[in-house]
Image (cartoon, rainbow, N blue to C red):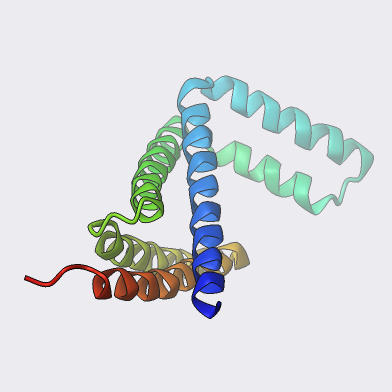
Length: 158
């Protein structure tokens, strides 16, 4: 019974990673297809409307500051980053859910690299979301390690 619960938790957490990968891919594609001018116009309109209601609106002032520094190069970088990050993550997730042996070592390498990068970025942004993603990645790695050991134990020996 314990193994079934661990397996369900593994499938759920990997499924969440897959859902997040799809969101990343969609967001990246959005950044690549929506014009830079449209993004800037939207951000300016949002922040201006909010600032008219409250001159000291923290979110609106930061959105306005972001819009002023958001370059076309930055837009393309994040678009490509999100698409490639999401595609790599989705490939690993699909492999894990299909119990492909290659996916487990790939998971260990890819998600460890994600953790390292997320914690590196945290040093600059102090975004708690990066820490939470890193915790989820570490949790998935631990569950994947458990599943990998079980799969390998049931493989025929030569």
